[in-house]
Length: 241
Image (cartoon, rainbow, N blue to C red; front, side):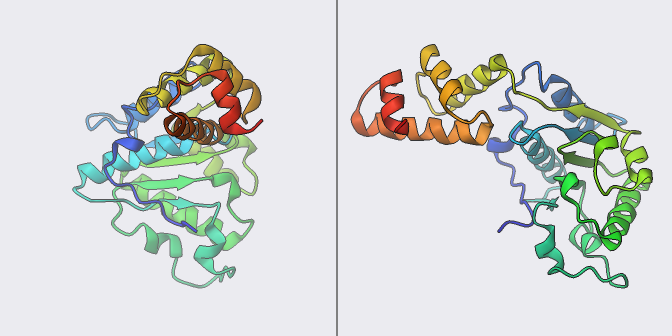
């Protein structure tokens, strides 16, 4: 189980290979503003459905700030796995585990804020950590499933503070966005992916990006083993529909 994401300076998570489309253009532009060394922005909140690219952008932000600080990686907390950080216990009087995690970090990176436990101790830790970074002018990037005002178990003062910064929705649910992403994924893998195969995948594969990547990798392996061009027939065989 991965509790803290490492952010090596790796092009896999760069902004350069992020596929820009109508559903994520604003989010991408805001990330560029946050990572602009001459810019004045230091707070960004991204929200949108699972698989839309929020974590990719968060990792790209981490790669930028780790490189700028001369580090191989920077910490990031995902509230998806936060129970493991606390061992299932949330003592009211204790050294902040979040503060320990982000001591000397060049940026505060938080994924899946909507999954923060309904525990006052954790919310207090996050609020204090947020304020420490914000008051110091250090960058903060947070992702969640919902817009700030719809976040569950989040105190009003943190919601209000999130709205002070840049807020953008990331949504690639439309077919045009998915097609762009599939073409980019295929190009990265040096695969010729015909338009009818893309249409077939959009009809028969779950529409989140991880599922599309998994399907494309399966097709690539099958085509290589069979020494055949990618086609709808081959895709059907590779995915056993």
